[in-house]
Length: 256
Image (cartoon, rainbow, N blue to C red; front, side, top):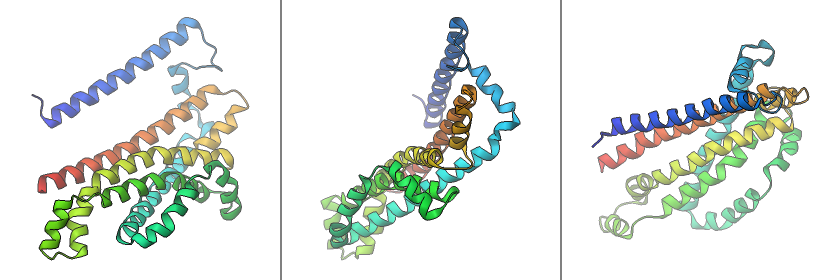
């Protein structure tokens, strides 16, 4: 039997080995079939772009990271707060939740030009696009978690004359944490897509902006490198959420 730490290390090692095998196969197949660089560059050709100053990788990466993190954090905050409000007030939920469902049906790409008009160019419009895409799954999953209280626990709190705040703090909030983090993991993925949508529509900096700039010259290695860096940002954010989930959910289970 493996301990939790050994099992996690073993899983991580398997993941890294699988990714390494894919990269090696990528390099071998590109070389073997002599695929043109403008169609699919090799991993080595892609990595070589990191040494060129003309792409300003660090500054563009930092801009996109701020947009992703800003949109995600705002989405998580608004989603959780609204879920709590909807759970505490069924009337507010009845009035506003259908409205949010309708607003979520709007194609987020269509909001991009409006955000540019309202907020001008810059990082903030892209943060708002990322927020608009990622907050709704967090809202729905958190609201579901808060509402799914076991009847026996609810009866126990009522029999002990516990207040509504006690019910929320002792029962609803701890029980909803797996749902909250489930929504946040989905939101982390969507925040990356939202930030890039904003940069594709109109931006002066960022990895999405860089991809649009190098597309005209068929600089495929730079485009692939930008995609890899975007993936790295998404994986990092997802990993942070996963780490927080393990910290708080496991801690909560041990305390109970």
